[in-house]
Amino acid sequence: MVTTVQSIILGLVQGLTEFLPVSSSAHLVFLQSLFKWTTENVTFDVLLHFATLCAVLVYFRKDILKFLKDLRFLSLIVIGTIPTGIIAILSKDYVEQVFSEPVFSAVFLFVTALLLYFAQRYGKENKAMGNFSVWEAFFVGIIQGIAILPGISRAGATISMGMFLGWKRGDSARFSFILSIPAILAATLLKVKETGIGSISYIYIIGMTCALIGGVFALHTLFILMKKSKLHIFSLYCIILGLIILVLKS
Image: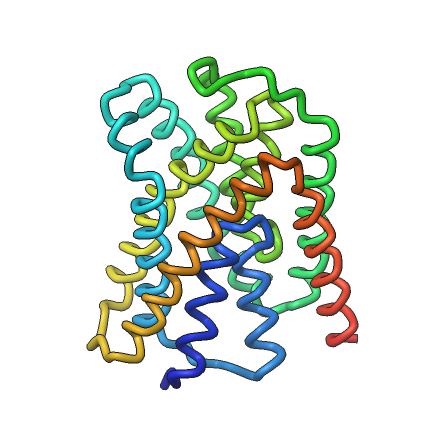
């Protein structure tokens, strides 16, 4: 049973780390290992993911309405989603095994740190969203699929790859988060189909609210820091968290 305190903490962590480039899955593994939390509550997990999806829809509502009229952009989202789905399906059993080993999360956090650092340092950033190619979108979709590994930040990996491809950082972030919509939605629906969804208590509502607020705040904060070329802050954070996990598990 999820307690009120767990609901608040897990909701905030899910909302903040889902969109900041620091890996929400690594934080989940870290919290479970640190506090010995084993809620194994599928309903709660599904609701938190739904709340983060709502955060994207709220924050990017104007962009989404505009892009719904742009068939080329929609085609890029579809093309980017295809490899993500294929990788997620093929790697399901392997990823579940990796989730049980916090050390893997630490190692992959270092990978995220390197991606963020080199993207900020060497990204060309000379291509606006209207010039993104089909193959570029497909490749970013592959990276999003790989980011299912705990410690690889989905946001960090896809934004960094966009910048390596020459995308402007703001446009790379927008594409990354809108690309996450079908991925989060599909993962949520799949869990509902596999396990169903139980009764929703007020404790779950508290967690969802925290995840929604945390998600919107994280998105707002990320765009402010990206404008100031501060991705290295998240790179340093990933290194520190990775080292903490390694020390605790040694």
